[in-house]
Length: 140
Image 1 (cartoon, rainbow, N blue to C red):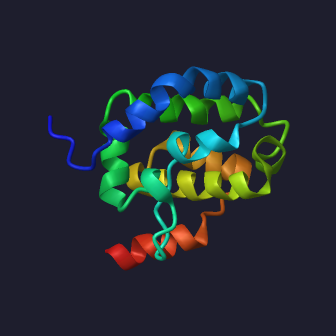
Image 2: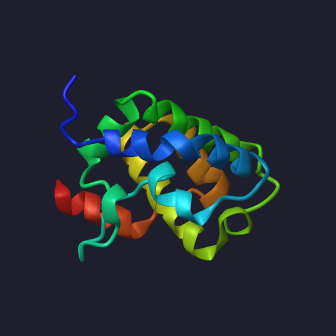
């Protein structure tokens, strides 16, 4: 399999951090330095997003299909269901909650998976991240 989108960069970044990140998340928090490669999102039009920004809906689909990335992403999202007594802002803080919202919106649009849609319903009142939707629509 060719790595058209250089998704190995996520595998490399997660190699030493994933176990720590999922443990922190299970305790009801998230570590800001992990956000970009655990919950990636589209890069900004101004080039914002750094090395872990995704470039398109197709790249998001490839991410979900690329083992172990898709499995880890889904594991993190499933963990959020155990935290339903709290909120995205309480777990992630204001800035990282916005990043989570953008990431979930992107991957829900890329896959239309019930798991991802359910988290948007539960954590974000079934609201998508508008900026992400605009970027996706501009891509089409």
